[in-house]
Structures are given as structure tokens and as C-alpha cells.
Image (cartoon, rainbow, N blue to C red; front, side, top):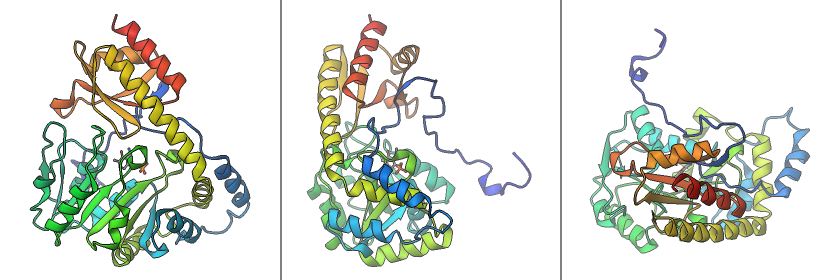
Length: 350
Ligand code: PMP
């Protein structure tokens, strides 16, 4: 650490992506990426735009906003794009958590990192039986709530009525619903942005739309909230979405059929894998996402994680918090990858 680093950052604990050690040739089932490449139309759009890269990209992502407005049934001024949804979350923690934040003990761990970075006071609300209990969020006292729905790494979802209830009990709180995994079977509450001016929906192209490496996320909210967030974005990173990523995003949105087909495949592979894992002695939570949260009756989470690495398969093991240290999170890959996973597990646990 150098003498130039501000004192306030000397004790920060950066986010662990879990992807820092990817041995060559490994099957990557550790970061909930999509196993299928982006739509061919995305690649075509990238090629078309590549020669214009001597110009700055559109800071307002107008084409993306227009196309998204058709797909998500919102107006173009109700959406803002981020360099991954992580950047949107960064804007929210930086600018909209004046009265503190609240989120579950077990959820996307980046929330905690961002809260610490921005000096936001946090109220941690424990899950009960791995579930988010809506009543626990009825009295937020103006804190901003961050709720991943479906939650990660559990894969369990709240119903829209539960979210409505939370919104109605907290007119003074901003409620952020992170729908990173919503396309894999849960219901989006995007329609509610027209009813509630304290709701922000955060979404990403990294999961159902196969663009994790392109870094494209977005949020949808009433137009006043979006304008506030745009002001933050334009103060920190006006050209936050590069031209290639804007082009790729557009191509992906023009090919919704491709996205839907891949989602279908992944959901089928998820149910197959869940069934097979249960036959092998695993406890598997019901999942409405592209991953499974699993625990074996006899073997520790760490043991299984290490055994799979020997078979060149990477899954996500959490050693913290303690109550999930015997669980692992397994991303759903192609059917072929799932078969290799199941075979490796059978060998390892023999
Ligand atoms: N929210 C949740 C719940 C996530 O799991 C992730 C990625 N793992 C993100 C947001 C961030 O996704 P991205 O920055 O790739 O859009």
C-alpha cells in the first residue's frame, strides 16, 4: 500500500469475483455466465460499427433505449444503461443511500462492498430458511433496500405482490429490485415503475442475454429517478457504454427469439441437473435462475469444490457466511457440460 492512497480506503475489502483462478481448459460453472455465445446479430452489429470507432460513442445510448422501451413496455426516458449492472449499483450506493441501505445477510455480496466503499450505513436482514420475508422489510426507516429477485445464491424468488407490499409500507424508501436472473422463470416487476415512484429495477445483459464480457446492464424507474441517475452517470462516466457494446446490445434485443430459445435450454438443463443431483445425495433448493444452490448429505462444500477442480470443473464455493459454507453454487451450462459435471461428481463422491 502506498502513501498516496486515501486513508479512508486503506481498509477496503474488494469484491471477490470468484473468477480469478480459472485453470486453462476448465468448464466454468462458477460465475453464472450463459454457456451460449451472443446472438449472431450482435456480432453483425459490432462489425458494422467497428469502423466508426474514431468517434465517441452515444453517451445516451439512444438506439438501445428505444429498442428496450419496445421490449420492456416502458418509455425511453425510463431507462439508463450501465457498464454492467454493477455500475448502476455503484451509482445507487453513491447517490441514493443517504439514509443508509438494507439488504439480506445472504445475497449478492457486491452490495456490502459498495456500501463500505461509499460509507453507507447498512442494516443486514437475515433470511429465514433461506427465504426473504417481506414483513422484515416493512419498516425500512427511509433506508434504500436492495433485494435480488430471484435471490442469489439461493435461487428463490419473491412474488410481485410481496414486492408491492414492501413498496407500499415504505413510501420514504427507495426499493431497488435487482432482477439479474429474472428471465429464468420468475416474474419481473417492471410494470410497477408506472405505479411507484420509489422503485428501481436493475437488469443485466450478462446472464440471459450472453453478454457478460461486453458489460451491459440497465435500470428502469420513473423518469425523475432516471434523470437523477443520469446526472450521476454524466458526472462520473458520460461515455460509460462503449460503441461495440451498444451495438452488441442492440443486436441482442433485435433477436429476442434467440434469447428465449437459450433460456429454454438452460431451464431444461437446470431441471435435469437438479433431478440427477438429488439422486446423488444432494439437497437442491428450487431455483428460478441459471444456477443451483446445493449441499451434499455427506460431503463438505469445500471437498466437493476441490474434487471438481481436479476434474477441471469450476463451481462457486462460499466459505462465508458460515451457514452457507457447506453449500456450493453451480451455474447451469450446456446439457453436455451438465453430463460431465454429473459424471465427475459420481467419480469424486464414490
Ligand atoms: N446483480 C446480481 C444479483 C448478480 O449476481 C450480478 C453478477 N454476478 C450482478 C448484479 C452484476 O452483473 P453485471 O455487472 O455483469 O451486469
